[in-house]
Image 1 (cartoon, rainbow, N blue to C red):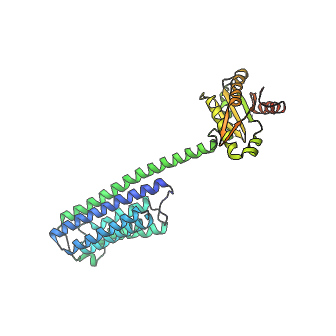
Image 2: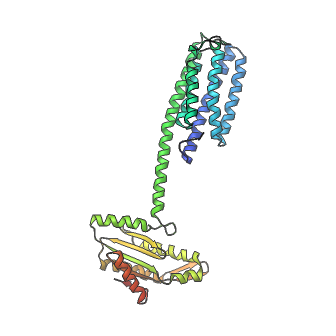
Image 3: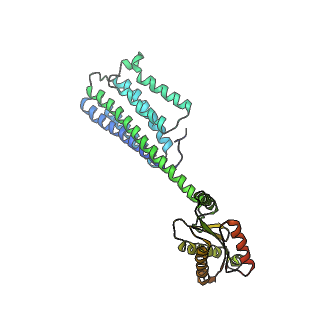
Length: 339
């Protein structure tokens, strides 16, 4: 038997809360029964009710420490047994056999029993609630309570209250699970579109961004940025220092492209991409030339080392031309804007 249809933390916490409520209802019912039979007798039922309460305390403990599967099985079987033994002890006129409905509902809502297990449990439920149609021992109870209006109303209300609570909790839990799943999906989307090191958008997101820009027909300029001699940084100072350099450049790009419509992303390796919306090439050149000067003047501290870097930038209105201009900048001396 699997514990739940869903396998995530939200569901586990919700089912734990659900079991806690139902166990408290069951234990409280036995407190009422213990007091009732202490007054009207027989006294042996008082001790049976106390034993029942101890069982629910144990089930509550199992639920609290995370033994949800065991706690669930014990609760379902215990309520089913209580319905049968209660009918045997008190008779069918007090409605105790209907208590089993409160045990069967969660097997459909939460515990995801196999089809075979559900058929068995549903069969037990149907047989139990229809005990009046079977002649024999249930027509001759040990402690008949045929005239007890209190017990008849009490057990009927327990069943109704338990079912209403179960359905309400089910609605709440399903909502929580859907919210959790939606949040996980959004987080996954965010992870798939973000570069984990620099926290900029990645190339996958840039492709989507370009498609939207082209569909809108809006003018934009592109800048392809490459760190000069980045391999030398990694070889001299190590890849951890190289990562610090990448993060620092990403910060500079973010600080200097703050318009909501602009895009700064890590294109791959030591290459970064800027897309400036509504910006012609002259304006783009001004922006990226300023970024180039800032990078050139920036000192990056990595442990005891202080590193200076430069960048080469190719600008154009399409990626292919940007790449060509970037290559020309690299070939002709680096640390410049070409385009």
